[in-house]
Length: 89
Image (cartoon, rainbow, N blue to C red; front, top):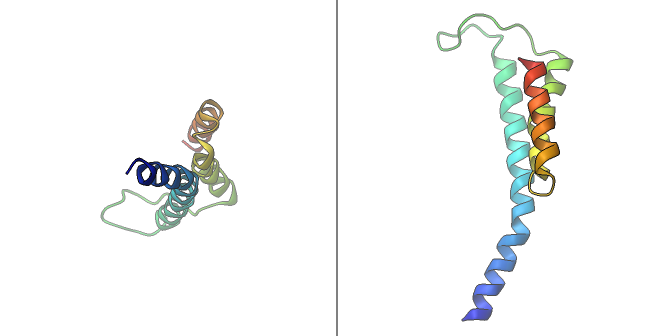
């Protein structure tokens, strides 16, 4: 029974890195889609935010993609994403 539990734990530990990458890519895609849709008139989103520029797309990616390595380098990821948020705002 203990071997089975250890095997499951080892498998789950390996998949944490894959899950982190998947979450980072999904968040980046969702953020880019939302930022692109903000230019469209909508009763749910106040005002017209303007088009998605290359600079804003890069800042969105700086905010989201580093989350893939957050377990290994938490402090640099926090500083990088925080800087991206500050510059984007």
